[in-house]
Image 1 (spheres, rainbow, N blue to C red):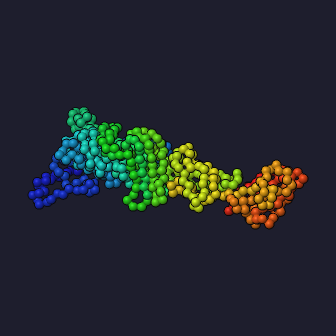
Image 2: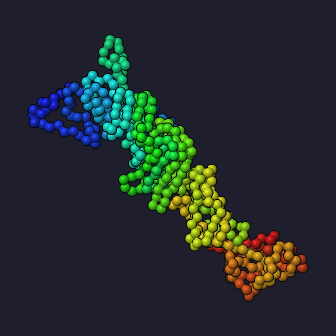
Image 3: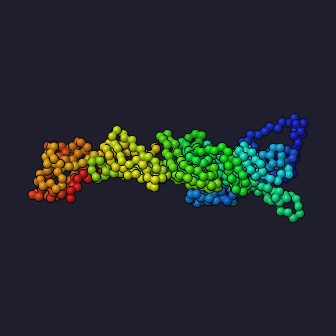
Length: 470
């Protein structure tokens, strides 16, 4: 198509004023071309199949996984900064002009470039490239943001940075008989590593931090077109994922971080009720163009015995099970709701999301991590044998007495005779007495030692075995 060039002086002579556009408005190729430039059409690709910047479609699972396990798609309206190095205003804005329907990892982009330019450096997204200083195949002032927007099944397109470089002088571009001309192709390389997080509930924000190393900040980049290598000029040790309003819904999210060796990786997921904290690893090497699957975030909690018994050995422990990321080593919270209940175990295992707790004092409590809580009740039911209806001396199972007395307790309170106490007896007989919670046990000539007696007590649907002399 024939291009018509109108000089700036000609426009001024016509009384027209040319105004600059903001970055947000610079996506379209200028309809008026400035003398000394022309519109160049590039084919753009992404290394491997890369990561979709606005719609990640996982093909494989695992951690770490090469980004080649994910499908990339360019999106309509995508913009890149293109540096031609051959004009007084070398940074231009290129806009997607056509996406290949059968393979959206490929597209064409149009951008004004200087006449005679043969070296081109490109940065995606354009908002990042606009703030960089570019010199041939090297970039300075590249910022990996420490605040990123949560995007379901994807990542913040303003944070997932890619670079490309094309040097057409290598092939004597446009000159020389029989010379091969390097194609107008920009093959973008992923600068960042990616953390894949899956949440099973909504959060206000998700913060990733490291004790040593850098995952955000300002960087210089060498070898932008082949294997981008980052050097931190301003280190950042945390990245926060959030939304401008509302909560981050349950689902899968990706956070773009700087590659490098980090230690003390910690993830803090905030809700209005508290913070779920995870420590998935001690030292990790994060490589560019690689997805690291952190795991499922968002604790859920359940308990196999919501009511446990301090007084006896039957049902006096409970297994608390947490769903969510393992190996957190987090501290179990036990909050008494009546000021008394205590439990023995307080630390989640580093290899499994279970805690076995043992009753230590009667009462009720909430137990869990963060805002994942469940209730648990510690009872104190017990049954003992005495030689007298009131007071008296406790008897063991070898007692030769032919008349003994069964007492059933809830802590220090004797349970009434009308309570759901059940018993089975062989070699003896039981009769109620005038004392609540006390039964007279009449045994044979061999005494209590020859009798067989089992006592159970049902409380809120849970049956406790208080005495089992079989």
